[in-house]
Length: 555
Image 1: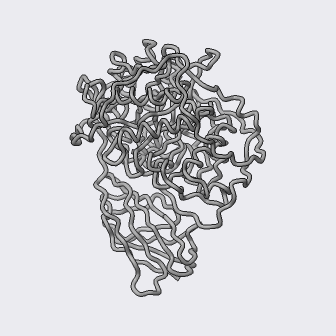
Image 2: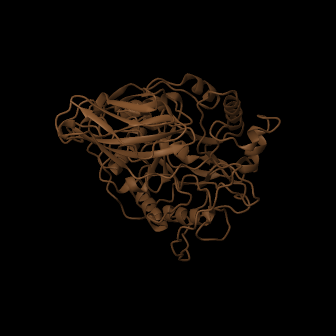
Image 3: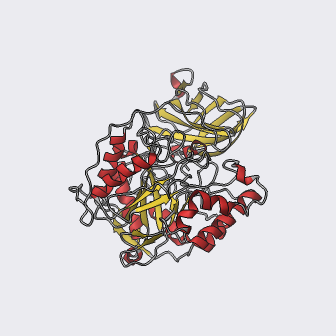
């Protein structure tokens, strides 16, 4: 979801920003990482294209993309989440062993330009801490390839704060969006493990399909960006999501509406490259009207056919169901997932499950909170469309070096026409969201609040950094800095309406009488003088504290 969603995008994918700055010496990039046998890479499909509604390999063989998302590079951490707990190779090995053949890798433009990531445990992932986010992306791709996994790059957000309605914002222009895509296309133009680019995650709100308004027309923007990417690497799949509001007045999930793509397709200069990518979720994420209609869940197939499935049924274009996921805790959700898996199996539609991460707020993940234990019930439900494989025996391998940017090639098969110059559109005034089918927006983000304990002997300072709020909870982080050597520290604050802390990183938290108390734990338990860590919590609450007064203690 955008993260989730969010993040509705903000209520899920914005939840995936759990992390903390890990202290310790940075190890050299040549440090060894456990790697699978080299033969794993031979299972990769290589460059792909499309024939009608089928994705095919260079030999013309049908290929189904079976992906899961591993998010985090679109958040303030600028790194896949969980690397504070597990090794990168352990996560990739688990994903491949579950039967997936592809990783959907979300990122933000902000992280592409960042000089450092955070939340990586150097003791678990030697050599990764010192990498820039772009170098880390190189490494994720190289290690995924070694595990027999292809990669889809997903421009999930412009910045790490929240999902945007449109493909640009006041801070991140359309030109920046296109330029960054061209940079990535050039960076990986000789890496066939990078099979496609998901141009923008979950267009919604004012985004329209073929409406003719250059500030809002997502089809036109996807055409401009798609041609720019293919001008650099004509072998990539161009993945185009839908919109929320369709031209017949119907609403669906953010990015989920492709009802108008059949009559008004995205037509690119290089043929056979477009893959459409809706998102779909169960009632636990948002109570869409079809979940309460008579005949549920038998009515779902007609809903999917109308919004995007017809593209495959009528052999118009391939579809990659770019996100779907659930905690699988209700009968309605179980019925939805069973029906969707059967639909995917019958239509042979490609997909990307949301998510591998357990810290997706309203869907959970494919592993438990320890980032290791498989969620057996979910995997059993997905079994009809997965082919689990035995993980290959690991062997040492060096971290790959950063590929040097290369010159921009032109397509060799189909000449690229010179597009008519268009001015970078200015962000339109946000339009109100209809109440019937759009998940609730996050509450406005308050300014960070700071706190210090009385007296100079407190030993720490802390800043409250709100991340996301929704109807039933919130996520917040704390930046904690030691003013001297600290062997134990705690932070407490009043949070009326908070009933439980469901997840925390770098801390252990409890709730009593409307007050939350958190104590440093794990890698953030002890602090060296001047050390700063980023810790956080996810709480169940009827309302979120806006800028609470923090009471600090340290020894």
